[in-house]
View 1 (spheres, rainbow, N blue to C red):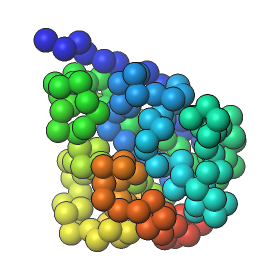
View 2 (cartoon, rainbow, N blue to C red):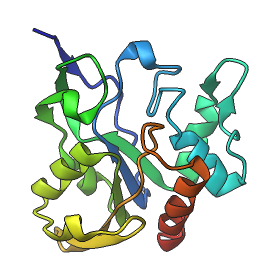
View 3 (cartoon, rainbow, N blue to C red):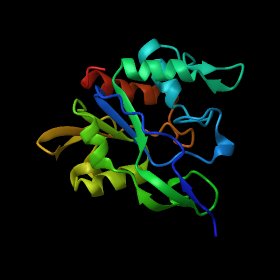
Length: 194
């Protein structure tokens, strides 16, 4: 039986964040190029951010080390009011991959606690189908399946109206050019004034 893994990173929750980005769970450490979110060098999340904010897919990429500029990423996310965590606190990998279909959820993250810690948050984006399913089931969001790529549905949380956005996966396994993915993310950033 595979071991249970506990989430390795602290939640990144700047108090003035307007957007909460939620994945499912980090890949296995053997896939990391840095000890932080979206650590797989083959994942395009940080390239998408580079395109959206600097018109440069390699803005955050450390090509020499095949990694990312972590301190610059943290400074950037704080400055642009973006929080990051995942929907699962502990998982078991059934086959050793990071694919959603190969993850057994042992315990979920405190989604209510995260949103309470982010009083200025107006939008949430879930990366991946499992993260989206966990989030929409928790908040009883019934319209999520009708969302178009780049669109959103509104939901209520403690007298606040927030938006859940649907964005393309930043995984290279998702068959869409990085630049095209960035176009969808740009719509969300513009919508939230980020």
